[in-house]
Length: 149
Image (cartoon, rainbow, N blue to C red; front, side):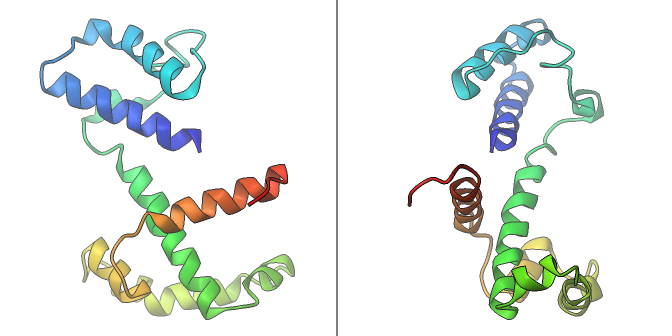
């Protein structure tokens, strides 16, 4: 869950940097402030803080795609559960072939024919819906920590 907050922090700082609202020199301090505010921790040093990612040197604007991937994958996961009511049992028994077959038939076969949004709509019947990712996180953490609904 903290990974997506990490992405928000990067996005906010990248945006402010590109807009000329902050300087490169202020990044370590601002990074630590945002980490304290959003995650309640402060990195030990810049190597595990602001400099932990290679993305600063590779350009700006692509980091939020990781969160889009999380949103898309949770939505596709939901569809797989609809298609295969015994999804968990099959995976637990070691059967992963059915997932690969379904992905090949419904997703991989289309390669770059459709935009990601179009393909997701074809796969799931709706555009990107972050609620599936929220539901996944709630389900995961309720199970991990025996939390009440």
